[in-house]
Structure formats: C-alpha cells, structure tokens
Length: 276
Ligand code: KIV
Ligand code: NA
Image (tube, rainbow, N blue to C red):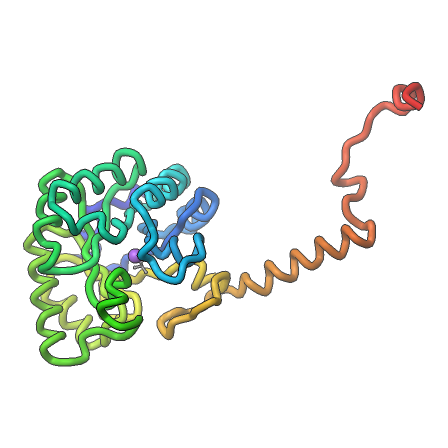
C-alpha cells in the first residue's frame, strides 16, 4: 500500500472510507500500529497524562512533543504523523506559532501539526498554513482549556455552543486545515458538522458520523486505566497481560527457573578449568 498523505485524507472524505488514527509516543509502538495499517499517528499531548504522569496536558512542552515525535516518525513508515502543538505554543503570536509548528516538522520530523480551538487561534492557523505546514483542527472538548471548561465534559449540547462550534469548524476549513478532530461532541452535532464540511472530521467520543476515528492507543489496548472515558473501547486488556507477565518473571527468577540454559551463554570447559 501507499503512504497515507494529506491528499489521502481528502480522498477518503470523497470516497466515504473511514480514516483510522491512533496515538503513539515511542518508536516501538509506532512500528506496531503502522505495521497493523493505521492511516495516521498522532503524537498527542495526552503524552503528558499517559506517558509523563501529569494530571492534564498543560505541562507538556514543545520540546517534549519534538522528542517523542522524532521517535514515532522513525517508526512510522506508511502513516501520516501529526504532532500536537502544546498549551501556549500557538497563543502568543502567529509568528511564534509558525516557529513552534516549524520545529515540530523540522526537528520532530512530523508531517502535520494539530491545534485546539476555532476563531481564537485562527490567525495562527492561517500563518502556519501559509508556511506550508498542514494543520489539523480540534474542536469540542479541547483539553488544554480544561480550567476554562471546568473539567472534561461533553461540549455543544446547548444551541448557542453548538452554533459556535459549527461556525468554528467552517472558519477552520476556510483557514486551510485538512481535517478537524471532534472530541466529546453529541453524535448528532458531530454528524451535522461532518456533513457541512468538505474536509473530513475525526471523532473521539463524537459518534459514527465522522470521517474517521482516533483513540489513545494505551486506552484502547487497556494499558492506561487511571481514567477511562465513556468513548474508550478496549480492544485488549494489556494491563492484565503485563501484570501477569511481570509476575511470571519475578516468580521464575526467585524460584531459579529463569534464566535457564536456553537464555545463557557457554564457554569451553577446558579453558574454564584453568581458571579455577
Ligand atoms: O492528545 C491527544 O491524544 C489528542 C487526541 C485524544 C485527539 O489530542
Ligand atoms: Na491533544
């Protein structure tokens, strides 16, 4: 198969084929999900919670994203790699936004960047697109606004908020984004937005009317269980697998069953004798 590109996103919108997206933060995971055939890999700032152990995404820096993007990019052969722009990296000025987005492309080796928000960040989106950097939008529950939103909750249930989200989606499309992530949005509203747009939407907790879906890999593999939102479906229970494998290792080690001959190296017996 061919590499998944920005034009593949637009082709998928036209053909109705669903776009698959997952997060990754390291080389080996990127290798696995790329080999499994995922269309796109997001180096999300969920990195902060899932990998770095923070309470939310606000502590993640551009340097953190670059560090993990480089690892993921080396593991992704076919998938399109998107780097999240972290909190405060695209809010100060369009110039600073372009600089930070450029670093995620140049140093992080990503193909595209993602920014949270609509009208408030539209000048930064336009400036980044003008620099020939593909941009992904993100509306609905935007976790970098957690302190303004008062928690992680569904967005757009009220008519005025829904209307604003539709307008923001159209503004982002107009500004040149090639897709929009819709997070924790009522499925009917996500469907309506998806139908209004010429670019695909990627849902997470936004129902089946979107052009594609994204999940946090550790969530869908059942590895990260500190907090499991309603929209997460677990396709594996790796937490139990990992705990049982680690217990097996400890147990075999303590009881002398590991390491055995199969996992050890030998030397010539004659040479050994002379050492005694
Ligand atoms: O950071 C992230 O993982 C994300 C997705 C959940 C959309 O932004
Ligand atoms: Na994110």
